[in-house]
Length: 425
Ligand code: NAD
Image (cartoon, rainbow, N blue to C red):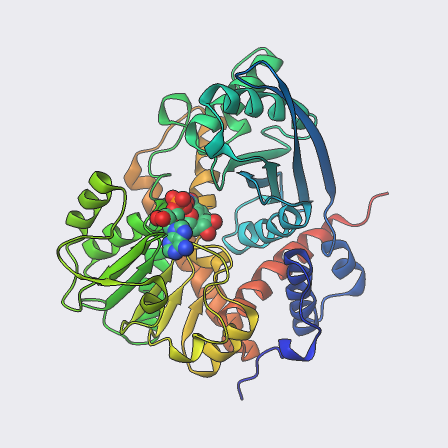
């Protein structure tokens, strides 16, 4: 018999952090996690709040608030991106740090979870101001980061250039180059080949597995992708190369649809020329709302959080939903999709390709030995395929959806490491 965790029976989560804790509580019950370990995993190991003074171009000093949260280090140093955004909150950073712990454990890389953020509007800052902010923030958090301790990476509105400034600032303080302190760097200073497409490539690998598991043909399968940035655009290109038919794509301004298939190369060129996929001649206009409900086999939300809701979940026609974005599906929508037999590949699985190749970047930096792209892609495929199979096995075993299955794998792995290490002192 199939059962899924009844999330409606509990009080609606108040914040993203409470939602993250609620997800852990649900899985703890399912897998019979001991109370002590459950309590330990429910809270972050360390939270650092810093005030970051920055000299602006007009000579004034502004003080920004930043955070670095380390959720868990039982399996290794913590890993997670830094977000520069006006809406950053400590609650959000804590939730993202906990999700990183599960994501790293699911793909079985020897990292715990962390996340950082600075409350700022990078779009309103000059390059000089951004550099000043990045260097001073790095200095403030340098007391807890390091290649053996905690390794940041890019996230929303932080770029390879910003990673280069982090690496340089940390290295200047130590007196020698330490590329392993941060990942997502430009190739010239120790970045990894394949990192730019890693999230999309990892997503492709798990969609392939899902199609095979559900006995659906890959060749010609119709795919709709919301978001045409790093994750969405590369997913469109790689999936088209693999034989999928990309029927709809969108960005913040709207989308295009063509049931016969869109010319992905043409859309990439159109986006580069005009800044949007809107107005591409090879398809009809479509809204973002319509895209989610369009006739397709695979739906890839690759833009925002909370786009699949209780309202549109009953209308989704895809058989597989692959969460390239973080948090696109609300818990109540999850239950509806599961009941309807739609396989949701959860974010901690579907977009784990990014952190996996970040791990490869860190390994290459520590060894000072750089791999060819073919080798990186082959290793990525192995990790993603295994994570899919382990998730599916747990989902079948407990009769739950793939998200709960993925959490079961990840939480059990972190719990095992925690138990083996014991409680200090
Ligand atoms: P990005 O900034 O490169 O692209 C975001 C895309 O979403 C853009 O095309 C933008 O136009 C579009 N978008 C913005 N608002 C939209 C709206 N209202 N409706 C439709 N589209 C909209 O960002 P990204 O790196 O591709 O990240 C996208 C998602 O993937 C995020 O949730 C991110 O956390 C997740 N993710 C990315 C990576 C990675 O390596 N890039 C790794 C893991 C998870």
